[in-house]
Length: 184
Image (cartoon, rainbow, N blue to C red; front, side, top):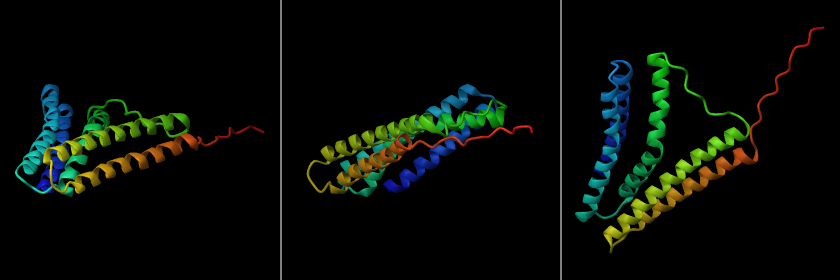
């Protein structure tokens, strides 16, 4: 049941996002689009409440509960970023706005960009680990090893993403050298 709800929340996220952007840029109803986009966090609240109720009703903590916590954490950290990114593209393609800025491709600006993304992953893992720890305390007695395993999954994601981000700092990609043509 929890996995189905996670899938429904993910689908709902994209449906609300598409509807919000369509209403904003195709119909010109900015307030309605804001209302639709503000409904997106409710999906995570529903997932959180249903997961808590499932555990409260005696469900054995499992990977599904861990996945729900990871999903909520990553949605908290990357949801607004994704909405903002897609809003820039929708404004450009549907409303004739300027093209959205692209992330830097080279050097320290790229390393800084990757570092900011890593901080989002750190936030996601922190939220997920806090939810998982809350679930462990909530359940109290019993086998909570699957929840602890997902805490380690979140920490490994932070570590792996941190190593990748660090490579952009230690070995920044250099911009290609362009040679000017000399008239002879």
